[in-house]
Image (cartoon, rainbow, N blue to C red; front, side, top):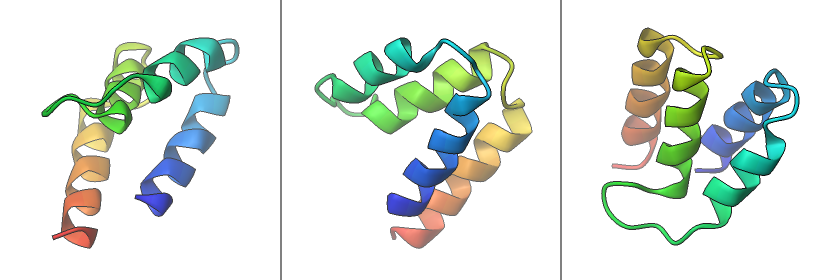
Length: 67
């Protein structure tokens, strides 16, 4: 989780003023399958910061590290 969070933090910096949105998503209660990290990843995808392929890669790497 730590590695994914660090990667997402770097990507969030590319969004400019989206940090408030990201903070809100990160602070919300997680309900499966919508974790706070998943919400941040979905926001980055919708904002065009990451591609769908990058989204899948981040998701798969996280899953592999946390089996």
